[in-house]
Image (cartoon, rainbow, N blue to C red; front, top):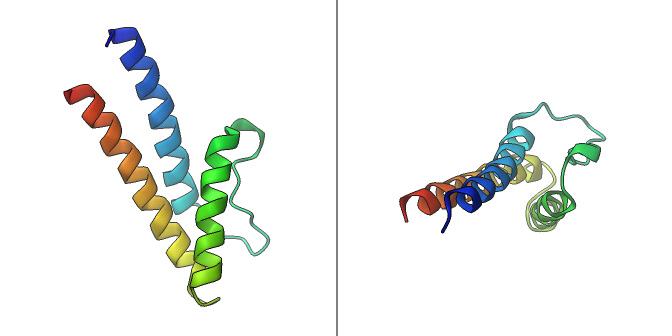
Length: 89
């Protein structure tokens, strides 16, 4: 794999992980839809919307935001570890 392709893939994956960490650690507002707005990719918003839907449907109303933020951290850690794995291999 060329270094340029590795660098480009790393930047995209780190952007995904950074957005997941941003959503996990930002302050919760009552009418928040957890989207990054116009500056994020549609794919990131779609993945995190599915995670929000899963946590909303399968968790009690009182705990679904905490579960969503935990799942968002796990998603960010998985993407971050995949990026590290790309550099090792």
